[in-house]
Amino acid sequence: MNPLRVVRHAAACSLILLPITAAPSLAQTPSIAADYRAIADSLIHAATADSAAYLRLGKLVDTFGHRLSGSASLEAAIGWVLREMQADGLQHVRGEPVMVPHWVRGAESADLVKPRAMPLRLLGLGGSVGTPKAGITAPVLVVTSFDELSRRASEARGKIVLFDEPFTEYTATRKYRSDGPSAAARVGAVACLIRSVASASIRSPHTGQLDYDSTAAKIPAAALSVEDAMLLHRFADRGEPVVVTLRMGARMLPDAPSRNAVAEVVGREKPDEVVVLGGHIDSWDVGQGAMDDGGGAVAAWEAVRLIHRLGLRPRRTVRVVLWTNEENGGRGGQGYHDAHAAEVGRHVLAMESDNGVFNPTGYVFAGSDSAAAVVQQVAALMQPIAATAVQRERESPAADITTLVEEGVPGMELQVDGSRYFWYHHTDGDTLDKLNPAEVARCVAAMAVMAYVVADLPEPLARNPAATTGSTR
Image 1 (cartoon, rainbow, N blue to C red):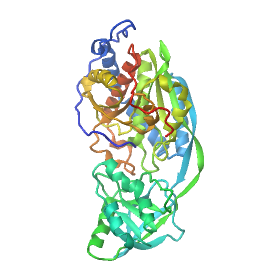
Image 2: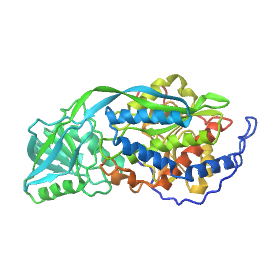
Image 3: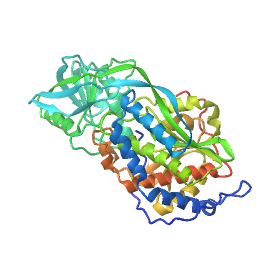
Image 4: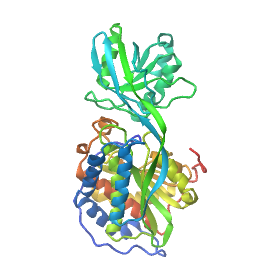
């Protein structure tokens, strides 16, 4: 999952199907509004005329469930995607091999021992080590920040450290999930708990990846539900001893083979130049991964299918990629970069959807000023569904396209109304019913129009001169 940039609601307008007109010739000076309005409206109408994307997403998540890297369910889902892409008539359908981490959760539990006995709701953090078979029973030190942990370091040895930091925004709050376990280990803690990174909760824990520091011991780490973290904090504030038993069967297995799922509509004039769009096919091992990111992956796939179905052949190739292993390794994005290293200079746009397929409001864009000016003109074509906003970012707006953006490829993420995203993010609640078929369809439209028009413009988007080159991230 990638952090949300903007939360804004946009209402959809009624749509009118217009005839598809021929794309402007290379010799013409492009007037995007005039030259592409009919094609844009046709794509918008086709995307929103039915619930095809939502139905396909339902087939994916109901059939295969959650799809953690290394799991049989992920590989079965990828196999199904590739067969369906073939049936859609897309070109150059293939699975591009990638080796991925294989972390297994195992059985896990947490129980409050003192001041009273009760089970706690938790999810182990991705990549965590397990506890001894008998578990770890220890007093809990509750802190609200890294600074407080430093001030109270002498109290932490032999204890379970709980970071009870309220959610503000994802990037700021996530650091306790990623960095908290190693910070706790440095002061002698035997395990680490965090308050789930969540903007709302019904006692639902949220998992996510941790980042062990090589300079600190690896200790077991898990996320408690917001309510349980606050309960333990209240006990501690009253001066009541808090003791917890933590049991985790987590373990890391050898890397496993996986694939990026790739398909294309090949360009009619410049097939070696590429607009790439996609989402990640993997998910955490909870819920269905419908919002994060099955919906984004299917929306990108459906966008390319619609371009093909309407018989549109842009000048450049439009390539959809369902990246593997975004959640706990990023190997799919890196693997795509490495497999296509010789053609990175011919990528004219990289676009991803990884903020949930809620109502689209526009795009987040990282690139040159001249490219942004063109993107703003293309975004204006989305006025029928009020998805015209363009927000600028200096860095890559999405995880799987980072290595491309670092080498100067203009990068983009679909911007959506994210007001509910962190209710369900990385939880058992990430299921199909949280999404609206009409909103999913509008996301398809927003991706299809942007991908097609940029792929068909007489000149490619200007590359970002400020980007680093030759990245090995």
